Image (cartoon, rainbow, N blue to C red):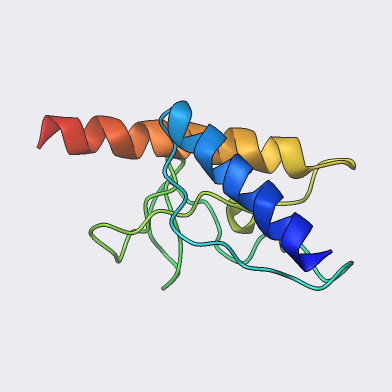
Length: 103
Protein backbone atom coordinates (compact mmCIF):
# COMPACT_ATOMS: atom_id res chain seq x y z
CA UNK A 1 0.00 0.00 0.00
CA UNK A 2 2.76 2.45 0.91
CA UNK A 3 4.63 1.69 -2.30
CA UNK A 4 1.44 2.37 -4.27
CA UNK A 5 0.98 5.68 -2.41
CA UNK A 6 4.55 6.71 -3.21
CA UNK A 7 3.99 5.98 -6.90
CA UNK A 8 0.75 7.98 -6.92
CA UNK A 9 2.38 10.91 -5.14
CA UNK A 10 5.29 10.83 -7.59
CA UNK A 11 2.83 10.99 -10.53
CA UNK A 12 0.88 13.80 -8.86
CA UNK A 13 4.03 15.84 -8.29
CA UNK A 14 5.05 15.28 -11.91
CA UNK A 15 1.61 16.41 -13.13
CA UNK A 16 1.80 19.50 -10.92
CA UNK A 17 5.20 20.43 -12.36
CA UNK A 18 3.84 19.94 -15.89
CA UNK A 19 1.26 22.70 -15.30
CA UNK A 20 3.72 25.07 -13.64
CA UNK A 21 3.13 24.20 -9.97
CA UNK A 22 6.08 23.32 -7.81
CA UNK A 23 5.26 21.14 -4.81
CA UNK A 24 7.70 22.00 -2.03
CA UNK A 25 6.93 19.31 0.50
CA UNK A 26 4.70 16.27 0.83
CA UNK A 27 3.34 15.25 4.21
CA UNK A 28 1.94 11.75 4.65
CA UNK A 29 -0.95 12.06 7.10
CA UNK A 30 -2.79 9.23 8.79
CA UNK A 31 -6.21 8.47 7.39
CA UNK A 32 -8.92 10.84 8.67
CA UNK A 33 -6.32 13.00 10.42
CA UNK A 34 -6.53 16.10 8.26
CA UNK A 35 -8.49 19.15 9.24
CA UNK A 36 -8.86 22.72 8.04
CA UNK A 37 -9.04 25.48 10.61
CA UNK A 38 -10.77 28.72 9.72
CA UNK A 39 -10.38 32.18 11.18
CA UNK A 40 -7.01 31.70 12.85
CA UNK A 41 -5.44 34.44 10.70
CA UNK A 42 -8.07 37.16 10.28
CA UNK A 43 -8.40 39.23 7.13
CA UNK A 44 -8.39 42.94 7.96
CA UNK A 45 -8.30 46.12 5.91
CA UNK A 46 -6.02 47.70 8.51
CA UNK A 47 -3.60 45.74 10.73
CA UNK A 48 -5.06 45.93 14.23
CA UNK A 49 -4.21 42.41 15.39
CA UNK A 50 -0.65 41.05 15.69
CA UNK A 51 -1.36 38.23 13.23
CA UNK A 52 -3.59 39.36 10.37
CA UNK A 53 -3.50 39.44 6.58
CA UNK A 54 -4.89 41.67 3.86
CA UNK A 55 -7.42 40.36 1.29
CA UNK A 56 -4.53 39.11 -0.87
CA UNK A 57 -3.28 36.87 1.95
CA UNK A 58 -0.17 38.96 2.72
CA UNK A 59 0.76 38.96 6.38
CA UNK A 60 1.00 42.54 7.62
CA UNK A 61 3.98 41.82 9.87
CA UNK A 62 5.85 39.65 7.39
CA UNK A 63 7.53 40.99 4.29
CA UNK A 64 7.38 37.76 2.27
CA UNK A 65 4.76 35.72 4.12
CA UNK A 66 1.40 34.88 2.57
CA UNK A 67 -1.47 32.76 3.88
CA UNK A 68 -3.23 30.75 1.19
CA UNK A 69 -5.22 28.17 3.12
CA UNK A 70 -8.43 28.12 5.14
CA UNK A 71 -6.82 29.99 8.05
CA UNK A 72 -7.79 33.30 6.43
CA UNK A 73 -11.45 32.31 5.94
CA UNK A 74 -13.85 33.84 8.44
CA UNK A 75 -15.76 30.54 8.36
CA UNK A 76 -15.56 27.37 6.34
CA UNK A 77 -17.92 27.03 3.39
CA UNK A 78 -20.28 24.08 3.10
CA UNK A 79 -18.64 20.72 2.56
CA UNK A 80 -16.68 19.82 0.56
CA UNK A 81 -14.44 22.83 1.06
CA UNK A 82 -11.19 21.46 -0.35
CA UNK A 83 -11.77 22.96 -3.81
CA UNK A 84 -12.53 26.34 -2.24
CA UNK A 85 -9.25 26.19 -0.33
CA UNK A 86 -7.42 25.16 -3.51
CA UNK A 87 -9.02 28.02 -5.46
CA UNK A 88 -7.93 30.53 -2.83
CA UNK A 89 -4.40 29.09 -2.83
CA UNK A 90 -4.31 29.46 -6.63
CA UNK A 91 -5.51 33.06 -6.35
CA UNK A 92 -2.92 33.97 -3.70
CA UNK A 93 -0.23 32.09 -5.64
CA UNK A 94 -1.01 34.19 -8.71
CA UNK A 95 -0.61 37.34 -6.65
CA UNK A 96 2.75 36.15 -5.30
CA UNK A 97 3.95 35.17 -8.80
CA UNK A 98 2.98 38.60 -10.14
CA UNK A 99 4.88 40.33 -7.33
CA UNK A 100 7.97 38.19 -7.96
CA UNK A 101 7.91 39.06 -11.66
CA UNK A 102 7.66 42.77 -10.85
CA UNK A 103 10.78 42.70 -8.65
